[in-house]
Amino acid sequence: MKRFILIILLSLTILPASGQKKKEPEFATAGEQENYWTKQLFKKEYKTQKHLKFSGQIKRLDEYTFLYDTVKLRVINTPPDLLTIFDEGLLQQWATGTTISDIEELADLNPSPTVKRFKFLVYMRRIANPTVYFFELTNKTASKTTDMRTFIKGSCLTFLKQGWVMI
Image 1 (cartoon, rainbow, N blue to C red):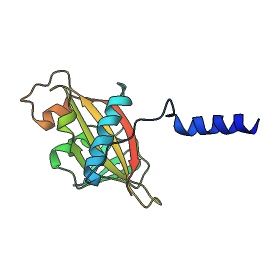
Image 2: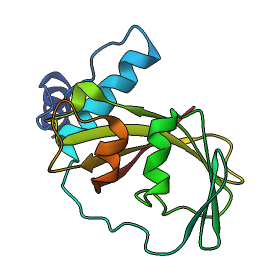
Image 3: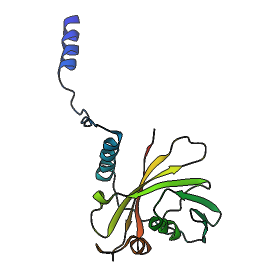
């Protein structure tokens, strides 16, 4: 009986495990790894969503601070054209005191001229590290020549997903 159990245990350690996850490739830099994770997120977790624009009153308190009724939101380290996203009420589901930073377009992941994908960082009170988020805007009337502000003004939020905490 002991030999039988020993043979089974040895067989299990020698045979490759079925259902094992595919190993991530090796990365030379953290940036390469983040790009890989981003592509995987859109490949595996993407589902078109429909988000409504903010319907309340939006005030711009200064260049980087927005007030959605009573919720204050700061947006820093972001190109001025992309601040239109907040003027239009496309991204507004945050707790007061939240800071959004470093919004950047993921041009390589845009599937067509009518869809633009972005990533950004969210800093929340009492949380030391920022969280990476991803979103997608869709403007059905856009073309390759549509400038960013015009694209944003005619768009709707069609995807929003939390990524990972930056360490």
